[in-house]
Image (cartoon, rainbow, N blue to C red):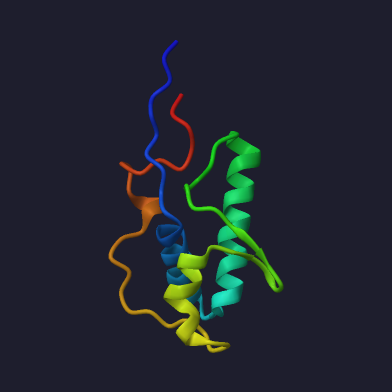
Length: 103
């Protein structure tokens, strides 16, 4: 049986979803909390599906796991909530972007 190749998301797409969700629900997040949410998303995906959700790697920093490129993108918010305009798409609703291995 041949497995289908599943296109991985990027950590930025996962972060965009969490930012959108936080902004929609009024539960704003800092850039450090964003790092932790992205980390937990990767961990849960690995535990449930035995495959990564995205390719980027985390580093162990003093305040927790960090993807340096993601940190650089949002570090200007400091301790303020990340407020972002319209997110161009929601990956969870896009049927062409699977979040689990194809069966």
